[in-house]
Length: 224
Image (cartoon, rainbow, N blue to C red; front, side, top):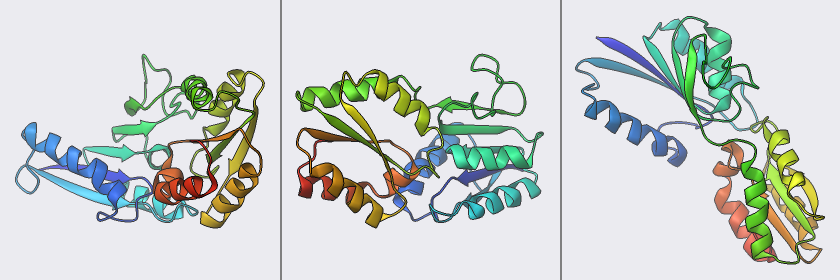
């Protein structure tokens, strides 16, 4: 029986909505391809821990590699980096990763090399498009806050640089947040000024706090 490892980035377990969102399609695609869990393939699942602590993700990566699966599926940049640090031999396929070349997961997009390959979510230039959309929503935009967690979005500087290039005179303010209290404080400060908007980088922390961010933005009248 073949063995496949799965590392779900920063999800706390299989019942977390974020984990189900990518595990269910993965399982369905495996079945469609003829790989039936428990019959001709054994799938070992591991999960990350708290968003503020990547040690659980690293420990889970080490556990999976120790099991010597035929291939490992990694969700997200933290999981991919943790697995790459543990093995240069077991094939790793990632999803939801930004700038794999910059983070040394691949030699190049055309020829990844090594034991890691996968699917890039988007490139940095998309931040310029996000700013354009925000300017359409707020024609007199004077400042745009970019909300993210630096621990879970280490690629944020590339997005921020692209946003600044497209800002056309608007101030770009970095909103570095690690929990709900910091989200509230950052948005409170931004909302004191009119003609403001918010870009929330789609990354693990923001995805996990999406409902709170939206509710806070609505309460303070910010565009997003």
